[in-house]
Length: 219
Image (tube, rainbow, N blue to C red; front, top):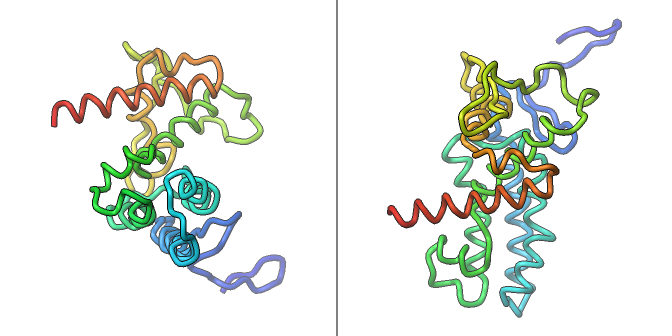
């Protein structure tokens, strides 16, 4: 028990702030549990009540009712434990399996058929877009000084190479300002030199497709 201005303040292990569950350990597992449960409830409602499960209609329902739950403020609480990543991915796996013509396909085949990406790819994309906004928009009143800082020397393929800080703790290494550094620094100049966020999204999507294609070719 603590006191603030003469009033007792209870010691709590978790608190909800702007829709995100924040725990005393700052680990994302609790948030993943609650998000997956909320999203799975909607999946269940759709499974029981929607008769026509065509690709077009189901994608509209998914992008309108389910994906916003999975995406909400994801840069702030993106999971890094394998069990948590799989817990969120299972929501999309479960949903895509209900779509007409997808039941007997493997997950990666279902994604190609319906035109989706894995949640891991989508969350990586969200991270990169957020980094671009931090570096290129006037965010002085939003982010503290040094929130993301450029390296002393620009990289050969990336003129906006980020400085990588040392982190002693696991939660710090997987926080936004640390986990994005290597992935951002790996982006080529043609992507990070976009003039606005919409152009950046298009170039990033093309880059991700190229990388995915090379990985599939080498598999």
